Length: 149
Image (cartoon, rainbow, N blue to C red; front, side):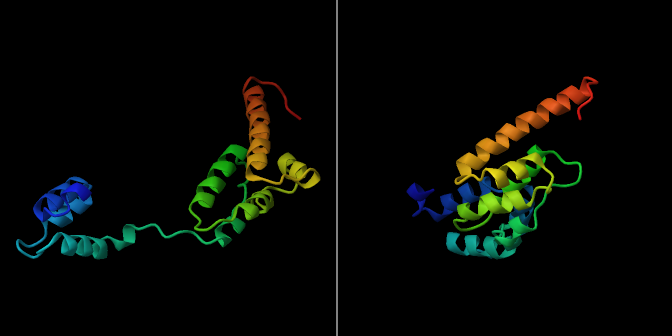
């Protein structure tokens, strides 16, 4: 679009092609002649669809996360990292502690992180992967009828 930034008619057509069904209905509902420039179009669009912008989550969001009763480490880890990636700022140093605090006190990974702390996210991810593999093996064995203590 930057190449055609001087051609406002073309910019409006390209803009239209990037819209989804709801936005296209909005666009089709505009009165003829109500928009006089591409800048006005983008401002009008922005004010109409401002609620579609995702606000970054505060750091406190990580503190409120915990593994759900009966949930797998994989599910908790996926939710945690999805939330972590939506937080604006560099809080890698907090990731280790907030992830650990979200685990149940009796969880093997929490005990491991307490007894032998990690110092980087890479180390944390490696430790999580190790425990996820163990958990997956246990779930597979349980599905085969083996009794897991």
